[in-house]
Length: 137
Image (cartoon, rainbow, N blue to C red; front, side, top):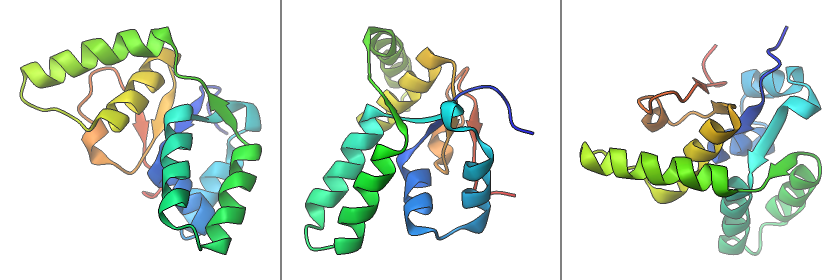
């Protein structure tokens, strides 16, 4: 049984889904109801950047748009911007900055009260951010 909390998928987890490279990730993804899984528009931007870098990958150019058409893409809004500003300042103050796009995704998850599904351990020490790593059984 899965939680009723929204799962916000990080780009690295979406890559596992698109490549069908990890059965555990695919099983966990399938168990989460459609209305409880989403990506940030920041993740969409990262996926589209990846497509621009590999313009001749027919597989990527068919899989990414198909995936994007079947998942909720949530807009980055003022609530996420407020959390982002506070997080970035706090991370810089303690000397532990995080890449901007990752910090935007973390802020988005916090603003939504969502669980961030990621393999990136760098998110683990962000106060209040709940993470799941679907690559770990």
